[in-house]
Amino acid sequence: MKKLFIVSLFIMYTGVKAQNLFPVKLENCNTEYFCLDCGDIKASYDEAKFEKMLKRLNKSLDLKDAKGGVMFQILIDTKGRGCTLSHTDMGKSYISKEIIKELNNFKGWKPAYNKDGIKDKVSINMRFTIQDNHITGKIERVDTDAFGKSFDRPVDPEIYNDHYTYTNENLKNYSFTIWNSSNSSLPDNSVNHIAADSKGNIWAIADSELLYLSGNEIQLAPENTTEEEIKKRKYFALGIDDNDRVWTDGVSAIFSLENDEWRKYKEDEIGIPDAYGFVNNPSSDEFFICSKTGLVIKTNEGFKMITKSKIKEFPSDRVDFAKRDSKNRLWIGTFDGSVMIDENSKATSFNDTKEMLKGYCITSMDEDDEGNLYFGLYELNPKDRKQANRNEGIAIFHNNGTWEHFTTKNSGMPFNHTTRVLFDKREKILWVSTDRAGLVRYDLNGNWENYHNLNSHIPTSYIADMCFDKEGNLYLATRQGIVKVEK
Image (cartoon, rainbow, N blue to C red; front, top):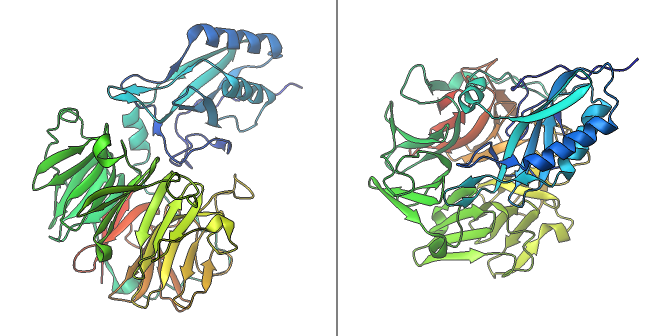
């Protein structure tokens, strides 16, 4: 008996992550950086070529007794190449498999554009429907407002650790203050980035809107009056340097805000058109700007750039994170591996070693008072790409030169993918944030605690970022607002 084509035609899914909208995820696309159906001119396709593709499908497929439809999410890059990210056919029918082959081989994709040029990568959604033994397909544009609202709910924890018992004996010592769209001026509960300045202000990006928390009041950042951004308040990365200058990645360029004055940085000045992220390094008076085309280091002398063309040990120019430790070693995570440049400017690619970081991208790092280093990790080539709880966790590089690797298998880590690690200088502990299991407290002596929306006042288990204010209080950027953790 022929299986029916799955009738599941929904836009959102309860297990959604940033890169996959639909439940059946295909792990064959490069997804470290893209936006959802964005651009002044949306991504699309050549209609004549698309009609030919539909004719091939209708001719080759046996559509008798098949009916219904499936949604597909397709990633389109700058060269018009398509790659299917996810779809809704839970039965993984042969019809869906043939459609995916055609979509991935289709030569008629048109990339998205902004006024200042082509977009890097964009995902679009397509609906394929079978009716009366005939298949049709079309783009379904994403309602970004509805998309954002779909995340506006608490996310219960996904605990992958089945052997550790959490007593959470220190939870009673903390108080939690929450700012959300219901009890404050927060424009949206989805807070993705957070950073603190030396004046006590907490800066954040909520639904691409830049804002700051002063005392207990949330205020929007001053309007960006640069020519291209005057009507656009969309920001996608955040950092604050030693001069309390706020840095953001905007719609069309990198910007900074100082004393209510915006500045736009041209590519020929800074070396890159946009940024993945910003990392302040106060101990060395450096400010790191991570990008898809290299690492920019800002000092008092200006900007300098590190790329693979300058340092052969560089695994890739796609830099996700960088930070210098107290021994003047620069640790860099790229999407093709991690590298360390020592105090004598000697570079070591960990892909060429047997060290702990081989096969990983450093995504976060902090250092304690004794010179021990703590790393958040992203696994580059997991054995099972469909597995959510990959072999990541946190790594510790001790001051005696030895490594430790903590995961759900050998520690109290509840989930292996981390979003930030921070050493708490007041308590001498490590805070670890995750996007599925909430907040982790590790006392560095084998005792782990896990706080989330089912056992604490933290409103959700999705924590995107963390920072300390000048008093040492911990702030969380979550999908349910800003959370202050105070002892």
